[in-house]
Structures are given as C-alpha cells and as structure tokens.
Picture 1 (cartoon, each protein chain N blue to C red):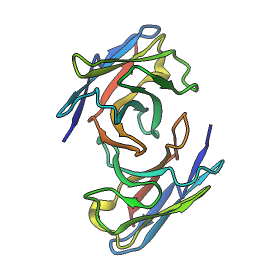
Picture 2: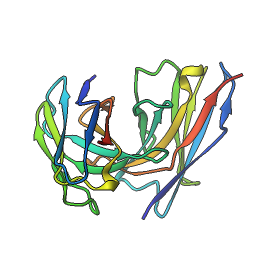
Picture 3: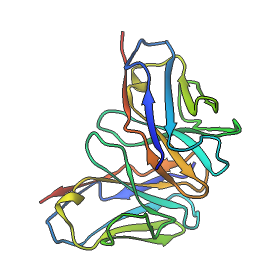
Length: 119
Length: 107
C-alpha cells in the first residue's frame, strides 16, 4: 500500500517561492503505471488541480494558476516536488499530493499540508 | 477547459434517506468522471471511477451513473459516516477540473 507525505514550510512570504515535497513510500515512484499530482484547497473552498508529472519528467500544468508552477521528480529519493513562484495571499491553501494509476483517477492522497502566505 | 457544475451545493438529509447529487459538464467526455468524499481536515477519498465503477473498499450503498455531460452519485441509504462534502472530477483532459462540491449535512 503506497503512502504519500507532503513536507515543506507552513509559512511563506508574499512574492517568495512556495516549495513542497511529496515523499512516496511503499512503492517506486518510477513505475511506468503512475502519474503524480499536486492539488490545493483554499480554506473553506473547493479542490483545484495544480499539475501532474510522469516519472520520466513529463509535466502537465493548470494554466489558470496565476503564480508560475514547476513540478519535478527525484527518482533517487522517491520524491516529487512543487514550486510556486511569486506567491500571493491567494495561494494560501492546504496542498495535497496524490497518485494517479494509469487511466484511473487519483486514488492515493497525502494527508495535506497547510501553507499560509503572509508577511 | 471543461467546467463541472454540481448540484445542489448543500443537501440536508436524514439517516436512511436516499440521496442523489448531480454533476454536469460543459462538454462531453464519455465516462472519465470520478466522485470523491471529503471530511473536514482530511484528504479526498475516491469513491467512484469511470462514472460508475465502485472503488475497492467503498460500501455498495454508493453508486454512480451517467456519461457524456450528466452524471449522478447516489447513496441508497444514508449512514452517519456519509455526512461529508462530495466532489466530482473529470480526468478526461487537462486541466483536470472539479465540481464546486456538495455539502451533505444532517437534517
């Protein structure tokens, strides 16, 4: 049973870069069957897909995000990461990482981590 | 982008009731639709995939149907554990998009 765990700073200043890492345990991130995704949920609001990455490094991003996004993978550490640049208060949210198996939706999620953008 | 519209936004019901939540898409995408349940402070939990397939371990009182642009999630007999927020999500094309959520509350 794979498990995912987000980690990173809980407080980021406006205009700085939000950086989070998702560590995958119980299986290899390099499996050709999986895509790995990032989501967020502002307090009291709905879910938003940020982007996904394949183990090979192919990436897919949500163009509606105002802050530039980069998702990367480190197969040696079994981790994938999210960077959101030039953040504003609107980027305050609980951030989740999740696994997508083939043509299925996201079936394994991390517990989520709250990131607050504030000076 | 495919816009997903859920209704109702809030649903008040009692234990034992049968409830239905609807999700409409702005364009057709066959059956690439998922339903998730989310409880406060928790990650979403996958209930239904490909519109009507029950995820392993999910009680059979949950069912999904539909294709094209209209989809439904039905809970046949509400249990206490089912009071939560429910989201639909299309995973047919990027960017993946969610409905705004349905808050299922106790009447």
